[in-house]
Image (cartoon, rainbow, N blue to C red; front, top):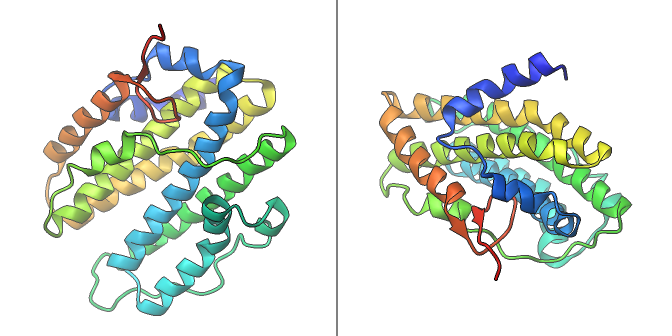
Length: 258
């Protein structure tokens, strides 16, 4: 990707996010000893991103059989992460969705949500596999780790009635994807050649994911959502810029260690 294309791709991301990743996070992330936790957390984040998209399709857009097909698609990845079952070789056989996803007859946005989220799932699961490939090549063992405060910190502010629940969750999804894109771009220059190239390769899809989430939120709301977007942007920026005891891919500013 040329420098001009790189900057063109990231410009809307920086306009959307209300703060940039703190330099303190970059300083911690580029330490060699922190690479294993970053890669393991990244692996889990790719699965969770796909699971979120699957949940949205199942709840709001697809019929029951389609939901079951989606769940089956995820099983090998979930077994690897939650039960440590499977391997890089066994996951290589599970890239494709085996059945067509049929929208609910009463959904006026179902097909659009399905189209965007199925593409997102395919890309997230492919990224999962790519991260695992890197881990295997570098003898980095997969270990269970706790989730960061980030996603939960935003989701606790989701409203409790429909369609507001869906609108808010889609906005949160947009911020998570936009932050991932921004953080990949910030981190890439500080990594070795292979990892730098890998993270740069993720930027295009991550940038589109945030746009897709935002477009769906506007479609579902059927009205201006700029105030709600601003509201979650402030929460997201606080989570990213405030001191954080944890260190993960989406954690806040690392606290100084005594």
